[in-house]
Length: 331
Image (cartoon, rainbow, N blue to C red):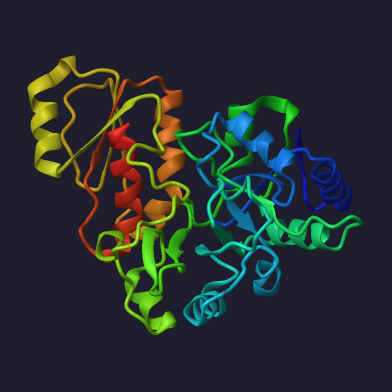
């Protein structure tokens, strides 16, 4: 059931569904989330069941502001506060020490919890309505609204293709960012990057006032976090990353016999076969991020068996796109 969130009745229907322990899909600026009341373990269990997601793989809790994060976090370090002040609402998730007895299922049983404040106006309206409802819903556990390990959804139609018409979906249009949030671990005494996104390391360091470490640089083991499995974000077709010269060489070898192949590249390639589906990758990293999952889904819908993607540039702006493509290719 796709609903127009400009209708106040649609938002109230979503709130009632969440209060009753049900699931609602909602747009964020990154991807669409599959939401449940983060404070009710039974409701969160519905997310794991619907997605086919392992119950020990934690979820990100969406909150309307930094003050609301304190309901789930036992202590918020100063550098985490600086990052929230700089980037919330926005595509940044902070891993924080979890308040005892709160959101155990959403945290995957860990002593930490991932929290973020989304920037999408529909997500914000839903979170505010939930917080002011009776009884209140103080945060939404909200992983991407797709089956576990598959391509994340960036439109309401993508969500419906995953779960059918039985799920209430608030349609906020195409997602502006297009890939999931950057995740920074704030539980180990210094900020640690667990997942790149559209925010660069340089931006995070400038806002937080501290160097951002990588997981292998810190002795203490990293907490489990969303979207950090080696294989993830995978379409049904096999993804292979190649540079432009390797792409052209592979096309030349196959010649007119090339079939069931889709290519996403910045380079202009010579494709001797009309059976090769081509889409041009934008030169701008943020635009490529916005289109990435939609392009992979389009290729799957066309029934291709192989998706060949040109390796993104090495500069920091492309880290999030490169991360998602690497994990898609590993599946």
